[in-house]
Image 1 (spheres, rainbow, N blue to C red):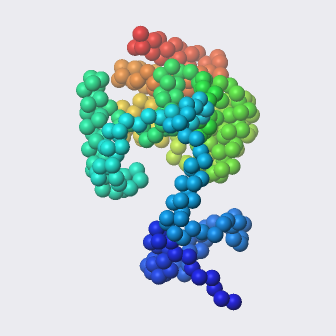
Image 2 (tube, rainbow, N blue to C red):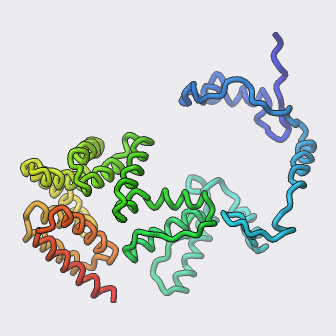
Image 3 (cartoon, rainbow, N blue to C red):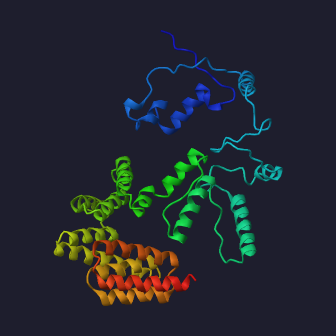
Length: 360
């Protein structure tokens, strides 16, 4: 049986058999199939795809594609109101002129490559924005519109303390997917007390990545909030097994033990959580998130005096409103489990008063 003559595309240099062989030799591979060994056999396509013969001539290919495109009616000819990402875009001519400059025509993203032109442009942009806004520091722009949408929602949620977002129905489905992914929908559901939906999202995340300890701990925390303590313990045990140095998982498990009346196990986890957080506090004393966590651990362990000192240190040290809102949320979760804890309630009142004073 004669082998079919290999197809060589004049516009794809490495389609030449000799070039392919040389490339395979350089990387020590027998064939292109060697690169797909990690793909399970059941996922690989068997046989040939039902496609028409290739257009080897570049001229013929161009005519073919232009003929297909010529059947369309473009937004240049007609106005459209489709939404979902399909709307009129105007790109000023100066943008194309700048983008085609040599210092911008670099590899994707640029970080691993010699990309001084892009970084120079970003430096000049942030410098001018800093002067315009009278700010000491201005961050570089977000990577694309999808990231910008999700990041702006997260920022608004942090500033307002709200967990619900209104989104236009005609938004691009792809952009909506990115917003949901980055915004950690499961956490939002939990804040809204939509616990079953939160559990479903966390469970889906664990299915996709069985070693995703953050999702396990998040599901465990959700179980704890609705009183399913045994299931919470299973998740916290797995999360700690994957990340034994994470103090917050120890704290979460300690609360679950307390709710079950297993005080010895709870105290053991509180002690380890305090130890881990204390070590980080010594390395970075102005990490207010860690300091507030440490204060909460002491409070939960019954060490009220130490907890009060740490909370007051964060207030006098200038902890941001965002960090204080996080601490208030954590105290609310604690009080939901132990509503009669007078010291926790007094601490919450203290933080709330200070937050109102600095945000007026």
